[in-house]
Amino acid sequence: MHPNDPRLRTFVDVDAASDFPIQNLPYGVFSMPEQPELRVGVAIGSQILDLAVLESAGLIRCDEVRGVFAKPSLNAFMALGPKVWSQTRGRISELLRHDNPELRDNADLRMRALVPRNRAQMHMPIRVAGFTDFYSSKEHATNVGTMFRDKANPLLPNWLHIPIGYNGRASTVVVSGTPIRRPRGQLKPPTAELPNFGPCKRLDFELEIGVVIGQGSAMGEMLTERQAEEMIFGFTLLNDWSARDIQQWEYVPLGPFQAKAFGTSISPWVVTREALEPFRVHGPAQDPKPLPYLRQTQPNNYDIRLEVDLRTEKMAKSARICRTNFKYMYWSSVQQLVHHASSGCAMNVGDLLGSGTISGPEKAEHGSMLELSWNGTTPLEIDGGERRSFLEDGDSLRIRGWCQGDGYRVGFGEVEGSIVAVE
Image (tube, rainbow, N blue to C red; front, side):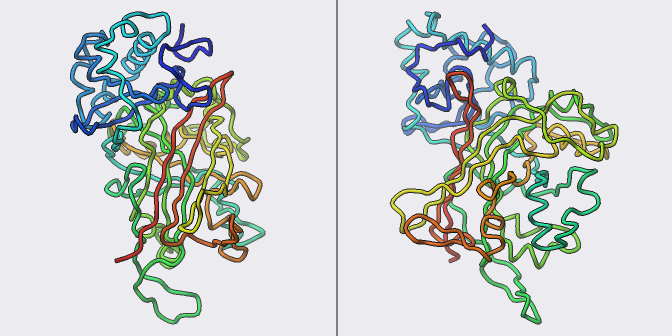
């Protein structure tokens, strides 16, 4: 059976609502209190399958992967290429099947290889080589253009022709659960004659999907649609924290800089491209037709349901503030990667691409506080009578995402971050 087959069952106890059934098998990097060395594992139900243990026991049966799972990132494994990725995932799926005794009936090995997820500490899954953030939701770009530019012509003339993006900072990409300190920067309110320096007053989130690049490309070379697709190892949840007031002052004429450099959070699990294959969908119709190098011959979007929860310091539990879907994205991840390399830019193993804020057509589908509060003019009403235009100190934001299959879901877990006050 193919690892994506809905009929597959595992001997591991997996709740029907789990993000991590046998059809998923996402990769992450973890450690345990009694074993602090970082290593690679796969999520299955409420457990983590320690791939370093399996490989040392000779159960992976692939010479190329020798030693790559006893490392603090997925980069060495990703560098082996799509054929090894697929073979390895197939073998892991085989070992976890309910009717395979190799791991199921080896009590000692099973005890060492399967560890409780709630006892593990999760770490950055990849060593980020470079981070590029895109601006690829037509709904989001239209909302922002309407607020700040021209209601009649909210999109800039190039937006429908080119996947817009900027190079961010790999140094401040952090794993879920890492606190985010409120940034400082130059601020210039509309009524002020001169800027001042101080803490951001309009701190925001951006609901995104992160694209993990698992293969490099040579400087000077372009990519085809097929080549770009095969370079994508998998996907994560991503929160591109944004300082809107710093951004408003600095972004003309060269775009975001310090307003985006202080923190980007990703989920600890990387869901493979292969696991998402059953959930491919066509994106929105592109009009005008893209230039030939950006045209697609297949569906390259994914039906990923996304939710955002906010919890303030006064709230006992979080409240849902957004529900949207990755399928709305105008420019696909493949098109973003093709365009990124089109000038001859070399791509590296471990590069991370942010999809850009994911917003849908309805207000409840807006993927940022900027849109949800319409730049603070209509503050968001939250459970308990609190209101928010932007994020305050002590606020915690959590993003979840999953694809719904026939009797199972392929999920991403979550990415969470809490705002810490400036010292």
